[in-house]
Image (cartoon, rainbow, N blue to C red):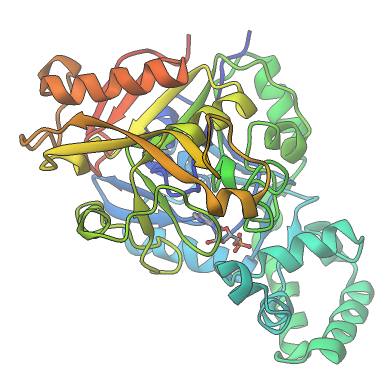
Length: 415
Ligand code: IMP
């Protein structure tokens, strides 16, 4: 079996997947983004400093790893150019990337449309044009990278969009798109074929999920979701390959956060929530918005496990929980006097759910940078074991700080 590891957000995004992918890609040949676009913000802290990647796959930070932008993504070429410049500015080696020729493009009017149609405010989107680009893809009006060779089609489409939406200079956009065609020509090709042949020849492939299970367009807290498939099912959907995984890793923060509108049963409006936000630096990597914070929600996490079939969990930012005398975790919800352990399919119902908490003892000791499970305070180890038992899968990785090496590795996910 070719070793393939899926890295999937198990909550509402921002689970520190960037760092986990960076750790796994150290040994990988390919790192594949299959969903979303510049709405993602995957943060890595390594010897070059801190970088937030939005569209470039994290694995491409290593010269040995090819970053693939598969056709399930939507790509903003203007943002990609900026991202590549940010990498250069940190004197990092040029990343090796392969962009699917089938990838749909985010065009300037997608952002204009997102504002005008009100989704930006209603859902609290990242305002990156993601929703309208996926809408155009579904309604068969989208432009794909391969269409950049068809100048006539491009002009017709851009003029039509300008007439409807305005807000940009059509001639300038056309000229820039033609330049992008040249700039990225060598990086574009058959991503599906490349991933499939890598898997067939036993190469190691890490699939880098963006956003999280509860933002999935089908299984998330609809309509407060993103427009793509963020679950493990997003991998065949967004790449055209059906890998056999050596691990399906659900990444969950040791507490819960969310940006944008929508239900968040364990949200804490007291000083606890505030303390989590400050200690965890919980401000959006893409938009800078303060994240809504609260306790770990095991009802939601068990649901994410059910949907994705995680074989393992990564529990990140455990160090942020140091200094709380008591830690709460939601083990069930109360819905109109009824106790349930099921995650409701309806967001309206979820908004009325009252969490039922269990309290666990906290710990004082600063655990930042701890790399050995045995060196954690007993209460921290018990917290991890409580999560394992509740979700029914082992916690293979534990994050203890922002740097990639601030990690406790309890299992090799490649074998
Ligand atoms: P969109 O993906 O920009 O359309 O935003 C839809 C919803 O998903 C909003 O609630 C966003 O805040 C949320 N979202 C999108 N991308 C991310 C992410 O990478 N992390 C966390 N939330 C995200």
